[in-house]
Image 1 (cartoon, rainbow, N blue to C red):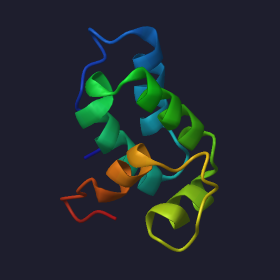
Image 2: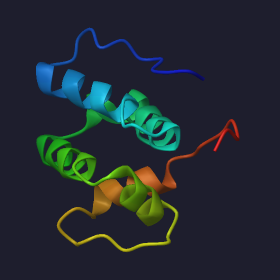
Image 3: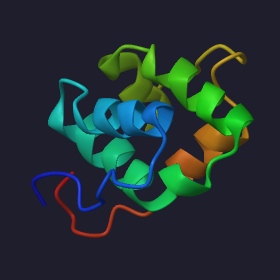
Length: 96
C-alpha cells in the first residue's frame, strides 16, 4: 500500500487536513499506522475525537511510534480512548 485509499470528497476541511496529515507524517511507519486508521475512521470521528487526533499529530514520530508500540508513555493530555483505538487498529499486510 502506498497511500490513502479513501477519497477526501464529502469530508469537511478539518477532516481533509487531518487525513492528509495522517498520511504525510515523515516516517513510513507512522504514515501506515495513522493513515490506515484515518482512512477507516475519519468520517466517523466526533469533534472531541478530532481534537484528540490533532493533539496526537503534534507528537513527533519517534515518540508517537514508541508509545504505540508500548516502549514509551505519553502525557495523559494526548492519550485517551482515541489513542487506544489507534493502538488496537489492525495492521494487516505485515509491512511494519
